[in-house]
Image (cartoon, rainbow, N blue to C red; front, side):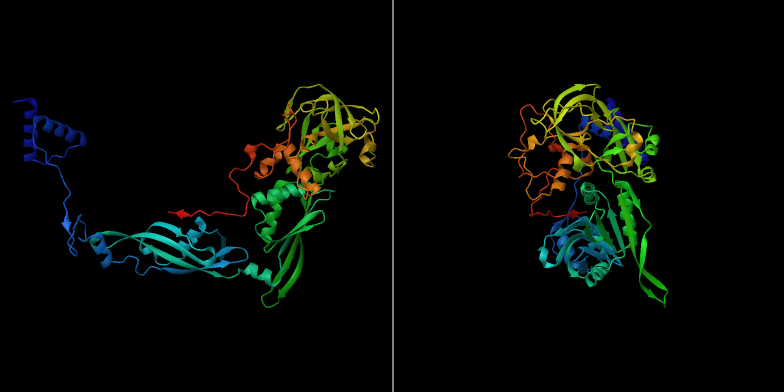
Length: 521
């Protein structure tokens, strides 16, 4: 007898004597041995039965009915809610979620689908498999959701069925919007943001930060004022939270809130007040020239008293243009010994660079790049009229070349009544301090002209964003495909332009909006 036949005989004998449970490897070995012996193997097939209703062949199940007959006998959606109502506020575009909450949800969004499902009753009697929106006309005030559910029916058989729930959108203003409509001046908290400077560049930058973080979404009214903006809120906590947000963006000083009694209920002893929060932003702005007071300079390590403000966030960053060192002041340090700018950006004068000699190579300070250099400059207004030339030291040596234009402060012709200047009579004041290189020539081409309706202050703010890429990190930029690129001179590579990869791609600012169907599982 062959060896494999002896092994099969032993296995058959053991099977007759007692039940044997084989693992997968043993069963595969047995199958191989059976195939080698030429023995007959039985292929297992799934049997079929006839439906007890219609008599067609079908796969066996617990109910012995086909799917069509089972659906005629049992409707698992019976008793489930197929019509519901959604309360929508037309003013703030929010939906009501019982018992007393209003939520923001766009059409065919995941938030709206969740609200629709939570509105249905007795949905826990079945198992929800899938849910999706069915498109309806936006003005029809109807929202349709297709649901697919499962439920165990006769003798343990599981039936799956789909049905549509129709929601009627009922317009009803929320409590806060009703109060505003009844009395537009009815607010609880007012935040008055002020900055006492002759320009609005800081407010423009703060506006972009508020838009990006959606910090004023709870504001009922926004009113521009002289040297500031007023924000009105329907809740005291919203106004306080907004003040905390501004304090994280710029150095501020928040005054003690004032309150005004609106009404009093003597029976319940309830008092209703209006609160006013006053916020003052520090008057120091980027590109300001500052003459530091002695007490402030001593706290910073006694740098040169003439410094340049390079960045204003929740801290003030100052640059010593003669040592290329940065010094930072937070809000508490500044308001402990407040000071004002000696000269602001509105007093910048345009110079032409005649010669540049590098003193120190490029230095990276605070994420920016500087190089100390000696330069010969002349005022553009005097160029060709007189021979007035100034020999200065500048921190823009890595950018300037002979023939370039730069903006700076004319210390030679400036008359200042700052009392701090009297305390520094021993210091030699330079005739000019350059602040930044200007690319005005490169923007005079056909494609570089700004829109004629743009205000001068907002135009200067946008140019400041182009000159300082660090400021664009906290601002959402969009590409205007219809705006032609500015002309650039031959060989010019350092033109101040925002890189295309920094602009938000696939953003269309047109009025046409194509909505895609939202689906959630």
